[in-house]
Image: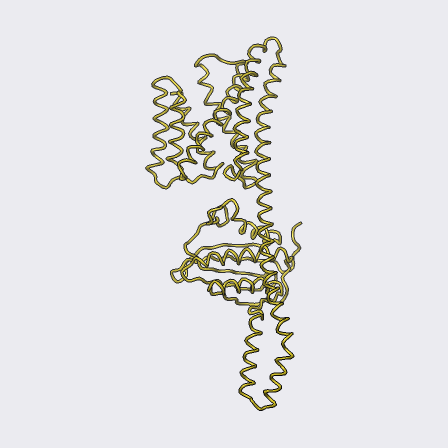
Length: 433
């Protein structure tokens, strides 16, 4: 029975690491999930019946059970389960040695060591839980985000320490009587060292991910700023060109009026009026900088044949810093533009409302299909999830900085799925430092 209990505990550890560490998606098919459990239990019964813990059986059930339980490419699941089997085996070795030293004062030869495995799995799980809580979840970085070189470093590091521990364990068994407490100190310092090194390597990997994210966000923001600058530059150039030709236009009109060609003069005025409309701001929000952002996305929406409407107007300038306002509204409207472009009836609505103490901004857009929240935010639908999905986080960060609130909802309107984000910002508020 000891092998069946071992399989069950190890199975739960695998599921925990894959689901929480790698954010794997369990299959919706209950038959495949049941088959995963059946494979794991069958391997445990086989090992129990033949009184063996064959590595081949262990490898087959671990690979097959994970492949049946989670949705992913078969190759990735095979590599993932093989790596997990190897790495969890290393941690289990450490914990078994630790328990034997603490409770027995040395190693136990033969198959009698099997009864230590249950406690070792629980102790191993505690280590994985601490890694998840203190490093992964805290920084919103998971093992699937970490670069391959860091994953390989952890496996190589574990291999080195496992070989090292064999020598340390032998040293303790052979020298505990001679060195007493010094032998215990060597062992526990070694255990602390390996756990610390694993945490340190993971911390460096996470810092690298966070740094890449910041760089990506900065690039995205700079790109957004450049697009808006180019739009303003185009408008400014059109205005300068119009002003340059204004004297000539006046001269032509004067001549037409002098010659009493009234209808020709009216036609010419209409043509000039149409020219100035090309660079005139179509939408007015009450905030000059917000005007630039909204009109830029109105311009993009018009190019993509997306219906864009604005209702409401502010009576005073918003309290947000220029950079924060760009990040907030730029990301909101960029997401709306991308989602609406995939819809059958593409449209975007921006609503501005004022209260005594707050300003409300509501942006609604049509979309191809209803999406769902994940951890309070809408997950990105783009394939490159590691380099996308920053938009919603930037929106949340900007709102939080000014002590505001936001709410997102996915509904149906006239049978068409719609996404709506409602943002409230205090009228007079100092941003959090």
